[in-house]
Image (tube, rainbow, N blue to C red; front, side, top):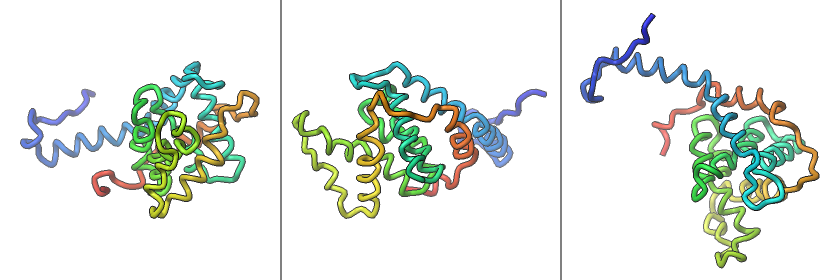
Length: 190
């Protein structure tokens, strides 16, 4: 059977039937989204960026620390993919990861991932001529402490080549479950 396609060539000319076809096609994308995220995460292997461990190992350490600390699966997956944009969006990797996660996670976890880059700067910005306390611009945000804690407990200390990490396969069921279906529509959010 041939794939159904919308009839229009301009979106303004579409009708309910067209958009029903498109919505059904988009819903199928979730069947493979977790696999696409994992494929991209694997691209971080052997990308050291000057650190002692490659970016995939850093991601696995961050997730392993969160898991061993008893965080829920959503938080652990956020920890796993928080730096997924390092090689594709180095200037805004945190926002890149947050954008992927936004429909699937709580507002708090989304905010943590989106802002972790600035909060992580607390540990090194001064060596680049930047204000290490830039994170304090967000001090009145209800998620400030959560993001500070994420960086302190799980992110800034996950560059240890001797840390005993859980392998990527351990996290696959959590990733697949998280990306199965969005919790909220991005069209209804600011």
